[in-house]
Image 1 (cartoon, rainbow, N blue to C red):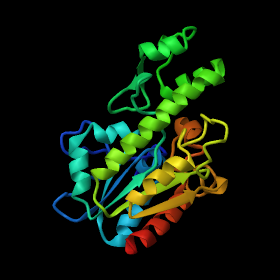
Image 2 (cartoon, rainbow, N blue to C red):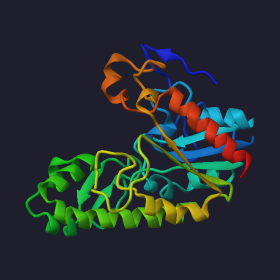
Image 3 (cartoon, helix red, strand yellow):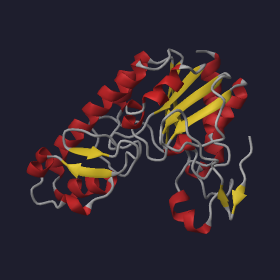
Length: 273
């Protein structure tokens, strides 16, 4: 499957599925034919990568691909879109990428139902916890959480505990609605850390630790960890697939080599699932 360049940037052939208003990476697949469904965030979408791992692993398995990855997606994206769940249930197999715990609505704040990284507002509980913070200054969850941690690391622990609890509950709920041939993928620059380590809000998947992953693995067919080396990220000579204006955002995103490794690992797991 080929993607063309336009002015140095990729054409992602955006498409829609069902009644969802979310634009996914295309070309769109005919749902009457067998397919692999892949859910996840920026890495699954394959930002800046001509052939992301969903395309590669589907080709390896002789299937079409329905890439339901979305840039900065959280768990809420899928739980709020019944058509996407219906499509995933109709797949020959499903890959679910582990996404961060910050881009979801919870008792402290709300996020946009489709663009989950967008911060919509703080609840009275969060305003009470941080009375000195002006929440109108924030548009994105990551920026807001970084500010809260800097303001009071002690109070920030309450926010972290809430996010981790809600993330686990919603991931478990999502997994229950997906087919049994389900692979859970960790695709990041680090391994899941232990809960006891210091909270780090700059690393993805944000706030997800090894205990949270361990709670999910008994409910999936396989769990795969792909740790991306610095030399396997976009901007390190493998393949340039971004314009000059996109260059700052591109650095640090997994590049073609990392996507090939993920596809190889996933294809092997699928053959044994």
